Length: 73
Image (cartoon, rainbow, N blue to C red; front, top):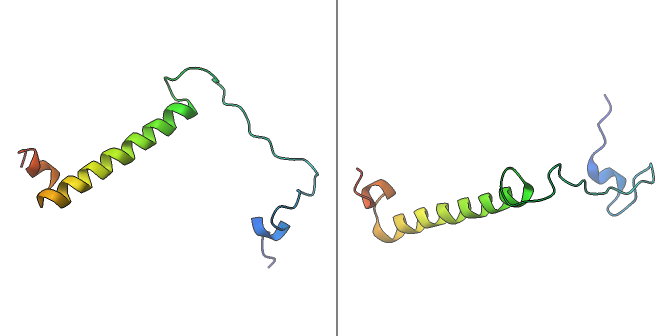
């Protein structure tokens, strides 16, 4: 059984066999800051990471879970 070619089998930095260079496709909605745009999703991810970090730091500093810190448990 033949092994499927891996991405590294072509060689790093070598052009593809077809000779075409890959270009990044523009999103369907190229404008605006609201909705499911790539720009909005990047910010959503960044804010989620900051929120998760805030929860972890709160638990490490207070030695309580986040619900106990807020008095919900």
